[in-house]
Image (cartoon, rainbow, N blue to C red; front, side, top):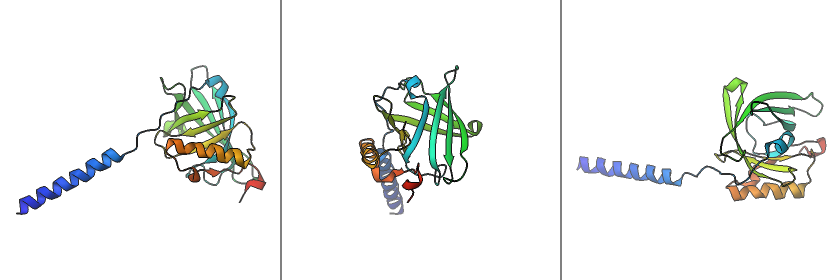
Length: 181
């Protein structure tokens, strides 16, 4: 009887583990094709899913510059308050081959910390971009212009639902004092 109960328990545990493995979400895949030359330059961070590295940072932007070796210099600029000086954090990105330039590996602190970057959509005129991670955990709304009206921000944020995100998780990043809550 004891062996039967142990066997039954083992089968139940295996069934739960198998079900959890099947329930795992697939990685996000971008359908975009990105022209790296057009993508380079300053992108204002209009919204994001807040996380430790960007929480509390305002007036933030990412600046990308294509290097001769094909890698991308990534400078993240931000302020902790509008009356405080701008700060910078440097990183180096590498485009993943075969990704239509949409998937990047970004190395911070000389490679001690690495992150995946996925360009989900980019406007035909490269005026805005939707960024995620293949894991689907983080997301950003980027714009070439520092100010974006609420209607456009909400419309772009809502596009994340098609990628499995909860749009309400994406919060506006204040770029101007009148946007602080």
